[in-house]
Image 1 (cartoon, helix red, strand yellow):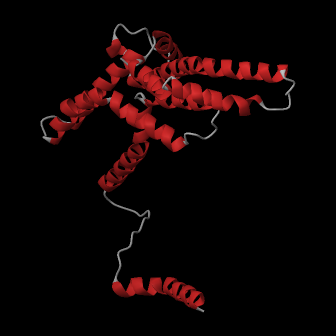
Image 2 (cartoon, rainbow, N blue to C red):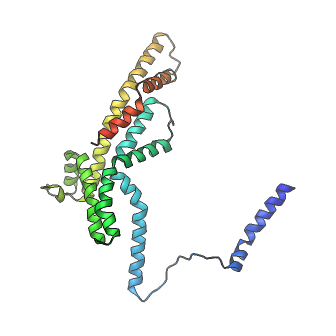
Image 3 (spheres, helix red, strand yellow):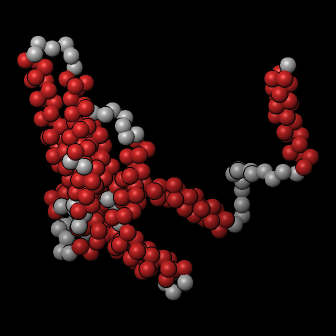
Length: 248
């Protein structure tokens, strides 16, 4: 009876919410399309819509122009090479990659803060100048990690002439070239990570076949040995230190 009373009270409260809202004058939000005689209102609404759209895409844009790509791909390769399925979980892999990204990008973010954000907040420079000052350190970082082959490929696809210096390369061309270079390096590192674990799998499979235990999956036997090897060589420190040093 007690549970029935609680359920009945909850349902009654939900049904009375509209009445209570009207009685107490709770605030409401209305979104609609109407006519206006002032074109400035339409322009302001479109600007707000564009700003909200850019803000929603800002995290993805920020991650794709930093060290996050290489870090998360390599860490995922490490997990797959060990064969631990979902260990560590995706949340831990992404979280570790994210904090390592902040660690690696700290000098760049410091330059952005000192040259763009703080002067803009102090009203010493305009918004356009702040954006230009913020993009410059990011472009320098991406140029250091971008290979000429990928950059030339994107410039050729876009039909742009060969640049004489870095200033002639558009940012919209630099970003995809940087992402391609990061993916290439990440897969190269992932291949090197796979080799020792692949050797263990081959040895275990050969031993099982020689013993006539062909019905036993080699992965079950090789997994403890791969984990033991990874722990003995301090694998996480090796992987993280190699990744961080690859950006220097």
